[in-house]
Image 1 (spheres, rainbow, N blue to C red):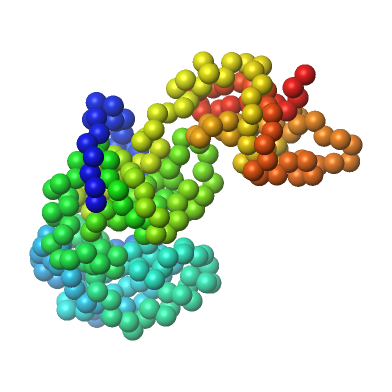
Image 2 (cartoon, rainbow, N blue to C red):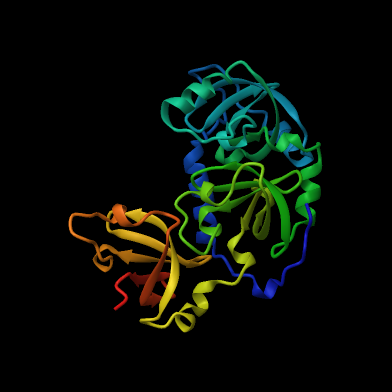
Length: 309
């Protein structure tokens, strides 16, 4: 981890709703079960030893637990008066977030295995005891040290450990942060794997820190100025500029003018020879000339045309 101080005065303020939505989207992908606070009448299994769990969490200790089951979001683990959940994104071997039957089959192979884990969430009042195999890669006691040194507004360097539909996890040297998909680029991102790959070294900006939940929100796009702020001045209406086609859609094509600045060429603005379709004349990566039709910087919308006359 290599921190570089960033001007906090220039840091964007994120409201509680933004931070909550990032966490809610992550949690919706993991299906974390709530644990019983009393002995379960159905299974006879005791509830977690919350006092011991809290101690392990604060001391950042490593424990070994056995996988006893799984659901679509991860695996259930149990041992030593502890029972909790490990989300898919925190399993070392779960490098690819597959869906459906493939994921179910993959997770079923974990049953019976013993995993070395750290507790990353311990919330008795919510019945949440969440473990991480990825976090256990770092030595015991590393997390408190890192959280005490990280500050909002810092630039950090880390390594991508997982890529999911909702964002990218980055190892900062013993604790992981999340780059939400909305913080990967000022432009349109269909899937985070367009931007990051597992094992890639990245520079990030720390946006929010929640030590009690072992969460760090990161950004890549805020390392560079927002190109939309000056788009109207730099791209006046009717100017003809070069662009690169990035995607074809049923109603037209998207094209990038520069990094983070992408617009739509509506089908009605694409001159097509008779009997041909858009896919017959355009493809992703193709260089084209476009005319600026509309720039809505506040909504980050850009209207383009291939009718240059």
